[in-house]
Image 1 (cartoon, one colour):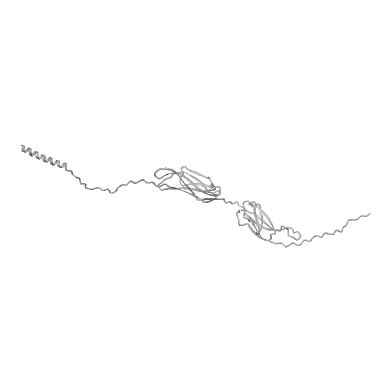
Image 2: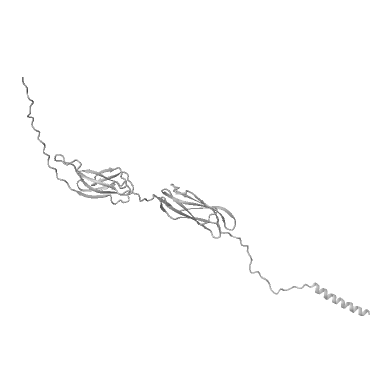
Length: 289
């Protein structure tokens, strides 16, 4: 019995030793695949576009007359990715003679859709530029804030309005002017009678009539359709007369002011024979006592 117990005890100790050795000895796991990072991520900052806006001011005309109408258009170019809703537009005039259009200033909005066209009427002559002040709220993705954008147009010139009511001066005729000879001499008013007429539709102020490039006389004025005559003594033969010779009158036709003709030169009148004075042969009677 004792021998059997010893054998069992020894066998148990052997089993216990094997178990303890298995528990104490570490087992290292060998991975099948080793993971290697292929990309290291980096942080990317959010960027926003830079805001810019350009006002473009264009006009329908650059030269016009008093009384005519002009259209002024305002448009806005904005940076891509940005927005700029327009609150209002103020249109005014720049120049030494401003304002020469009516109205002087125009405000459109709110809101003011773009493009925006405003009309003005020319009331006086001069040169100006149109300026637009555009007030809106800009945004490029980061924040909103109010801002002004401005622009100016090219120069616009306003001239005096043309009119169809203008005078038109002509020399309608040149005739012989004579009188009664006096004892073998020509009359002092012998010469050319120049007829001047206003065939236009408006009256004239004073103007000058010239004959043969020398003698001049002034006409105080002629109403539309009126005619008058002037005598130029001693002017005979070839006669050329010019109305408005000094270009004082603006006429509807400036090419019809001259007229020429030939006036005959009369022969010298015969000398006058004086009437003889009878002698005084008559005496008073004498009475005697």
